[in-house]
Image (cartoon, rainbow, N blue to C red; front, top):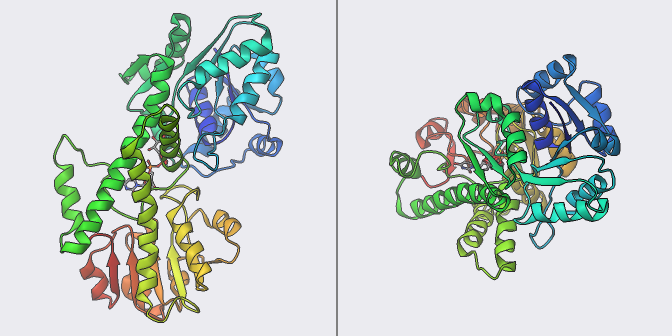
Amino acid sequence: MKIAIVGTGYVGLITGTGLSSFGIDVTCVDIDKEKIRLLNSGKLPIYEPQLKDLVQNNVKEGRLHFSSDLENVIRDNNVIFIAVGTPPKADGSTNLAGIQDVAKTIGKNLNSYKLIVNKSTVPIGTGRYVRKIIEEYSDGKYEVEVASNPEFLREGAAVRDFFHPNRIVLGTSSEKALSILTDLYRPLYLLETPFIKTNVETAELIKYAANSFLATKISFINEMANICSKTGANIADVSEALGLDQRIGKKFLHAGIGFGGSCFPKDLRSLVKQADSLGYDFILGKGVVKVNENQRKYAFNRISDAFKDGLKGKTIAILGASFKPETDDIRESPAIYLAERLLKSQATVKIYDPKALNNAKAALPELICASSSYEAAINADAVVLATEWNQFRHLDLHHLKSVMNGDLFFDFRNVYTRQEAENAKLKYFAIGK
Ligand code: UDX
């Protein structure tokens, strides 16, 4: 069995590497020649736990290849996954330019039956649209099928998620396509992974529905936290009690400064926009987006309000830059939002992150990068814990306080207890407790 994956971003690289570990011959192709050069020299363009070893092993064993020759790769493979970026446009709708380009190139190079599998998160109806483009550019000379196989990979845990998924969704109405896809994922079938076999549109919607639902849980618990702050209730206990109700479940009930990343914000806005264009007002989705935007503003205001004489000239240390732990991804990161607003208020911002410092510095060159949490805290008037990396869970708060100039500690991921912070003579600010 041999397949091609178009797009070596996050999703394409992990899917391609994972499938090659199943013994499939995989060629990952990208128009970005520099990325392909990097991958061919054994380096990765992103940080993701376990990925580097896996890529290197599969390359060594001759099953995983990288190429920038899209046309040849298309002609050479009958199963082609599309995993190119689908970034948001300014109005929140999805930019399908990358998908359209790939579809046209497939159409122009169609030389036999091909199964095209959409892995990118795309608006409902895109499968049909891709098929139309391919048929148009190939004059309908060969049979082509377009299936949907959405990904549910969490950054920082993507390799584990690939090999131990909660479910595999296969969207196609063709028996032939279904049998090829089922065969590709056979090792997971043997692990008793549930397979949802459905039509293309349903598979496309499942991806948006899953992310929207998870984002809703987060915005919900953040609103509960904000109510806690006004009443003396404690969000940690509220979350625990809610999570023990098996109908609710424990996951995604951690209050904080809102969700970030490349998926939740983008997918939610896209679904709101798709619903709008279908004449349906997705009221809940709009609310979830709004709550999330407000949550990071609220966090900034907490810092700003703590300085009676303003932020100008103050030094703030931020711990964490990535949108969540175990990744160097800073897209829509609340930590970067805070850093940007603090810089705009003329504060000096020092930042430390185990993996994302280069990306943070590239986004905001005025940031002062530190090589540890304690170095960041030196002479700081306030320390803000913005991303809950494990190494921030056991800080020596006495030591942290001793190197600071001030005593403000904003624990925006609710990692510590008030008692722990106050024992170190820190003024403690958390979310909902
Ligand atoms: C998500 C989905 O989980 C994955 O299935 C999908 O395919 C891609 O998008 P990811 O963006 O990597 O994955 O991160 P995830 O772990 O889902 O967290 C998203 C955001 O929510 C992070 O900013 C995180 O800090 C925040 N979050 C998560 C909370 O604020 N509270 C929680 O309880 C859980």
